[in-house]
Length: 252
Image (cartoon, rainbow, N blue to C red; front, side):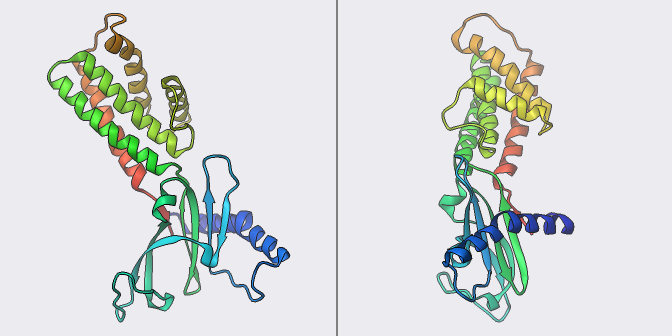
């Protein structure tokens, strides 16, 4: 949760940068009702360079997790009215949009504004990469157990590279189709800027250097068992970190 001062600053900046200009534009174009009152707003952020889209009131598409007042009981599919809601616990995009876009979504409830924001892009694709990374991690553990050094290096590199790419997808730093070199360069830069732990970068770089020899037998290589275990631990740490990254959104 954000501190109260930061909450107010974020809300004010979003209103000033996106919502108020859109309201003004529509008023000047004559496309708003005469007695327009702003009750909801939503800004969608795209990873492909498009201008953010601004939705107002009934245009917003939001899934809300709510707690009803004690006197109200609801069945799935029933209409919900604002006066029946005691608390809104979470706001998010509709499923298909949630997979791709970042957003700020705002609702006015009982005179107060509720705001949710999520500036991660490509979450659906990042989750697919995370799922496959877990499979490569299990394969690497099995190879380590059986002392299959070359398959261990190849599989653990694939695991860590997929996790690095998953992080970069959330930041819209890479496309679905990209190269090993591009992922390594951009992930190194991401870590060098002070994001996350340097051992994530070190494991990717070390396994990248070993992979060609392990996969294509281009030269001999060696890896101490203590190093192998350290890289396995780093991969597990990255898996836990990305799992949290892929599940979190911010509400206040």
